[in-house]
Amino acid sequence: MTGWPLFWSVVFGVAVSVFAFVAIVVAIGGYKDVKIMLDRLKSEKP
Amino acid sequence: MDLRHLALTSNFSGFDWGIVAFYLLATVAIGVYVNRYVGNMGDYVVAGRSLNSYIAIATMVGSELGLVTVMYAAQKGFTGGFAAFHIGLVAGVVTLIIGMTGFIVVPLRRLKVLTIPEFYGQRFSPGVRILGAIMLAVSGILNMGLFLKAGALFVTGLTGLNDPEHVKIIMTLLIVLVLVYTILGGMVSVVMTDYAQFCVLSFGMILACGFAIYRLGWGHIMDTVQEVHGDKGFNPFHRDGFGPSYIVWMIFTAGIVSCAVWQTAVMRACSASSTDVVKKLYAWSSIGFLIRFIVPMFLGICALTYFSTVHGVTEGLDDSEATMQAMPIFLGQILPVGVIGLIAAGMLAAFMSTHDSYLLCWASVLAHDVVGPIAGERLTEQNRLTIARAFILIIGVFLLIWSLWYPLRQDLWDYMAVTGAIYFTGAFAVLLFGLYWKRASCVGAYFALVAGGLSVLGLKGVQEWFGFEQSSEIIGLTAAASALVLMVIGSLIFPDKNPKDLNGELA
Image 1 (tube, each protein chain N blue to C red):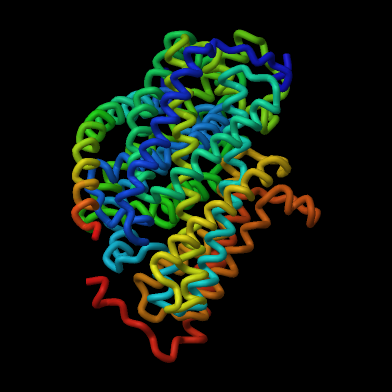
Image 2: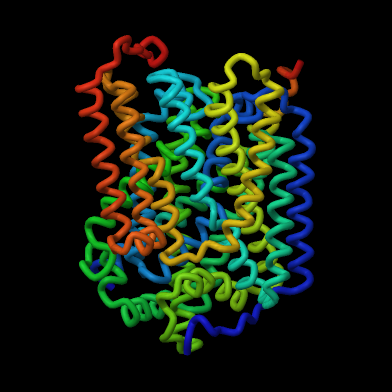
């Protein structure tokens, strides 16, 4: 495999691997952020 | 065999329906629950600007990785092969550059505007704000006009439902669910559901790719694309394929506009708790902007491989509706029970998530930037919330009607790029010069917005009406260039008598 087919294979492989890593990090971090957001809105509500 | 006459067989079972029902009901319950936290328009539209980095990234990607995105990207992969990947690559790289530089989005966040037309009002005049808001809302509502149709094709393809009446009932039910929790919870419920959808869909899509590669084989997929599309299936610059003008159009639409000019993405920047979070949000989301195109495109390519080799399909490969439905039919036939339910739940949640973001966005623009400036101080916060909720309901009804009768004559992605261009070609010029050029004037802004509206000529239906034919990218690029030139000419010839200086707020 050479040229464009090789290029798109590498792009696809790298993109999916990096995204899988980012998705795990964001899923864990996002759970904590949801709790912070709700606490903040709750405390600001008159 | 003809792609348009494929039998809709599927592995979708009662167990899968159970997964879908549980997921959707849980989503609505969350929307109803968080309603108690919504106190004013700021909470409703931008979640009180309380989003930290991770949840901001999840909601940005969750909202942009919708069912419609998956459908149009898969269709592009089916019709364009691996060469279509250039759209995702461009989107990812440009979003990363925006994240590193803060181009457009950081100044907007500093100004603390809720919407882009509000910036027009601060920088130019109430008239520019109202015109910009109307163009934005019309363009945005037309843009989401075929979401329901795409959703219906997905449901029929994935589940194997053959009765059109069942599909209509399901789609009506979905839009009602979306309306309920968006009207009640606003941005807070949108954020919560986007987060859930981000988790389910991110891992579900990667799983689906794994199944597809395991079933078809990487080498076989490559060989089929070469056989069906030839070199243009890999080389995006190929003159018989996408070509250079299409790539430039994509740098503008899928790149700059998608992340820095399109109101739904900018709303995420405006919801962030600080400008540092905005930059981090865009830098991290760049991989999401890349993936939201590349993964569904790959599934579209797999669908092409599957139907070409397993079913021997050679006809109907250019039919808009058939090519859009190919990916869900393919998934319905290769995924096992349980996994297919999870994917369906994630996709339908994605469908609802995009709808809620878009409904909220366009209704907020109409309430905040059209009704608000016209009514002046007479409107209370509660009045504005009620008006925004009423607009959501009206837009929802319009979408049901529009999806039923508008015939799609081009790829869904191209339809969306053209309808979006009615707003964003002019808006880009107004934002660019309004933020970075002191001499930009109200007349220049009016000229640019009106010039951008010429993009409507890119719609195939409009071209048939006027009796001419031109590619949508040429029309879009011409409108964008005209808007930029007219913005400069209008500002130089008709400068503002009392130019507004936003440097204090932008510092």
